Image (cartoon, rainbow, N blue to C red; front, top):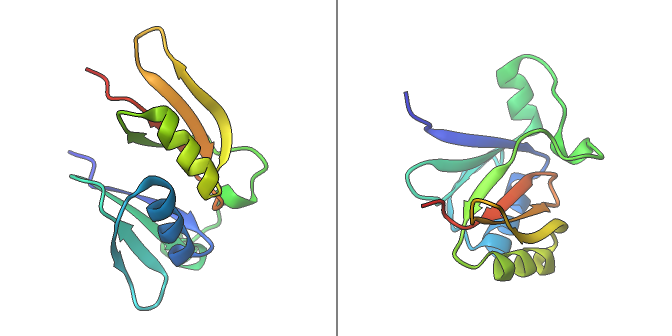
Length: 129
């Protein structure tokens, strides 16, 4: 097996695509005419967004919506960048909530965390060699 894609369930797919483009520089690959599903250009795997009603219909049950939770959910999207500090500042200026500013971990990786307006937790980090 291999990871094919990640889908984040959100209230407004177009708004999430727009935010990720402005905050992180990821370009929109696709937005379905219904507005219920869209993808970003992220390399080998896709980062996608689906509206809550589409997700609930596919699952056949309810779930905890990231935007409705006071705390971030127990999962994150990791975005690799050579300049975590600049990426963190840019994301916060675009509307993300800064949760943890950049720090250098004992293994040498620089890591920061932001929470997007749709509730998605994003780790900004340098590559691991």
